Image (cartoon, rainbow, N blue to C red; front, top):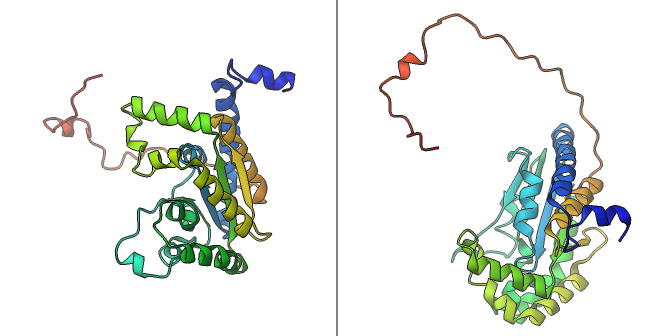
Length: 271
């Protein structure tokens, strides 16, 4: 670790909050520039986030999207398939969420459920799993050939750090909602998930849609590294904007608009 990195790290070697927030603000400003460029050029981008449970996907996605427009950066987090969706082509329920011109769609979990949780937990057959691994690169080639940029991130958290995060969720009532029925089995099936990950990477890490592995034991570093890499993958320029001037309030129809609220129901002032 360099001297600069030592100064930026806390006692546990993780990035200090102040340093993180300063760097995050800079990167989020660049994301705003990227947003305008995507709209200006009519680009279509799909960003897939996959990884182990408690790897920090949600926090990373929030860091990307909290300062940009949800109409440009759309987050898609589909629930388990319905009975009807289970009878459809596997990719069918994802396609309606793909971007139109000027949109970046972020999938919080994606079609790669079949390569991970569905395979490990026995929600699909070995034949369905193998068929997915064989056909997924072909479908992604079709997506890319159609003019959509496809970016895939795999967040990798270590065994000890994952255990610590699960324990924190169990103890903290503000985090308990994060514990899904699939989370606890992911602890006992650590190596099954590791093997499923390796099979997925071997089959679907293609030149047209490569996987980018993001170590996430340090959540703050992971978020910054992810945003910086995302910005590097989509060439963009700053779009010139007209200088904004706030117009003066018109006095036409002037009246005491605050007095007219008297007698209405107000939210009680408790703080």
